[in-house]
Image: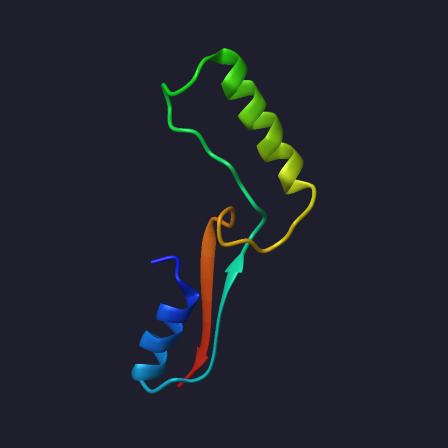
Length: 71
């Protein structure tokens, strides 16, 4: 579901025009509860907060994809 090319082809098949599919929001790293020790959790949290200071679009770290299209 995080493949913009696939999403764009699906939206184009629906007959919509001016389709733009892109990653959005600030990059983010998350950790499932109960995984890793105290130090690892703190390192990941610090890294996540640091990445939010430098917003960039990245398929590995962006939490959302947004689709713009016209009918």
